[in-house]
Image 1 (cartoon, rainbow, N blue to C red):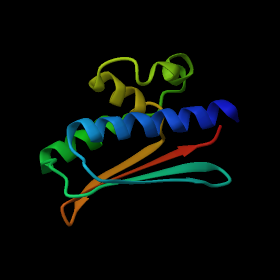
Image 2: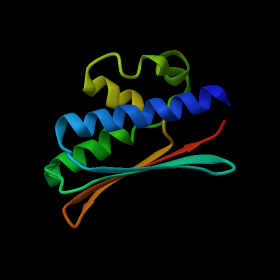
Image 3: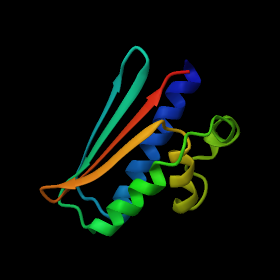
Image 4: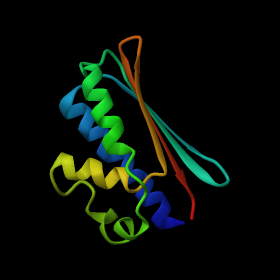
Length: 114
C-alpha cells in the first residue's frame, strides 16, 4: 500500500511541476481513493496550451500501462527531463483524459490498484 501511495504522489508531483513550468498560474488538484483505484483530477485555469498541445499531451499520457517499467523506474520520476517524465507517468496509469473546455485544461488519471 505504501508504494501505491508514493506512486500516486509522484504522478501528481510530476504533472503539477510540468504545468507550473509550462503553463499554469492557477491549478486545482484532487485525488480520490476508491476501493479498486485512484482518480487524480487536475484543472489548469486559463490555459496557454493550444489544441495541438492538448492532443499531444493526451497521446503521451495514454501509452499502455507497463508494469515492468513502473516496477523499476517509478522512483526516478522527477529526476530527468520532462519528455521522459511524461512517458514514465503515462506508463504508470491505466487511463488518462486530457481535454480543454472554457479555456481550462483538464487532466484526469485513473490507476487501478494492484
